[in-house]
Length: 563
Image (cartoon, rainbow, N blue to C red; front, side):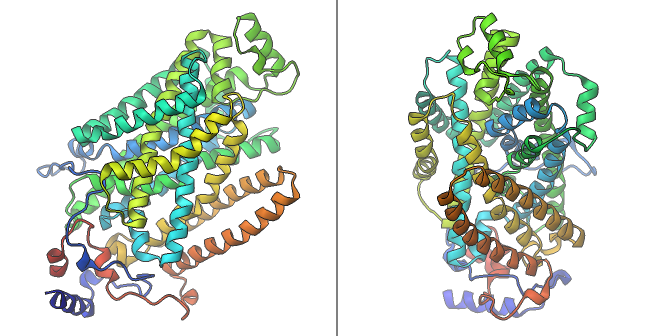
């Protein structure tokens, strides 16, 4: 039987292309796992799929949009994690309203990249990590997985510690940082199994957390009453008057905080939760349309929440000094007066100090509501970060463990360093660690952006939905600009270390890093049609990849042979 199936596959491979779609010679990079070996369906997360109404004939249907609503909002939580909130408040405190246009531009770029991720998942039925597993040779695949895991660990540390800081603020310091980390770990395990009660209930829970963030930070916005004219000017006038290196570094930090590598992998997986017939071109096209609309709405809401935070700190704390903060906190009887030394240095804030200064200027209610918003941001992003870790690990390593074992492994990898930091660091001195984690995540961006552009540009993978010339060029330019901006951020960070040993170590790591990025970029350029780079030293191509790539992970062997 196996020999007959292989023979059928060979005959199918030699058949002319269907629908007039020509197969790119560069359709694969390494042989995939044998399709015959996929003898049973394997569910990563969503055992049930949301049905899509099929009796709606309008060009646009709110019923269908509601059916597709969910994955985009889960994806948008990465734009609202504690790292983003800290970037927002620092932007407001250091540059006022002047960098809002950077935030707007970064969110739009993020939307375009998320569109590519969603299209890959819808068209192929596989998420980005699974496609990477089938396309790249073993060594690059393992390196890629390790790099993405580093990004997830860095993001997870910020998210969990964000929750711990919120709990510390809410308990007036009674819950130490390490205690908050343990509480967050525990409740994350509990919440992660909500999807056992139905996927839509899980999505509703995330919607509730986004609503809590909107109400919390919206309350601060209404209370502070920012200057609306300055806000609109900062959002739509792409200029930063009287800005120096501090503001430039903050602008780069905004881009790095908004566009996160693991979120590309996450979104490409979440879209698999809808019941779509991928053999029906119209259904696939319709799914792409509604997912893009949903993602646009979700990121618009996340953008508004980020604007709330920037505006609050721009209006109330821009150009404020430490001695002003000390005087105000002392006058209100705050126990945190010692956080602000008696000097005229510009105020430096993070999510912990941000809550403190809000409490000093606007009363205890402002502090506690801020902490509730941070807790919702940290809890929701910790959960989606766990999903990212599972999708990435399952996709790259093809794990077939029990669900609890997979959750335990991915959580342990991310949580262990976080717990160590929480034990040996106090809550007031985490800014240096956050800077390092931002740099770490910035360095991992090419390992998501380059593969997603590569695979969505291949007709052998995307068929009629492959990127057109406009998307190839614009996508390439956007990814080049984003990676260059983040590399600048890394260079600024490294040069500030003032250690010859660290300079030498950074130089050695940079050589290895750039070589691997160059390898991925080489494959990407060939997939974009730069044929003169497609020279003979390329890896041996697989003969069966094209057939298998267009087959869903859950499709059995008989269906595959029929196709």
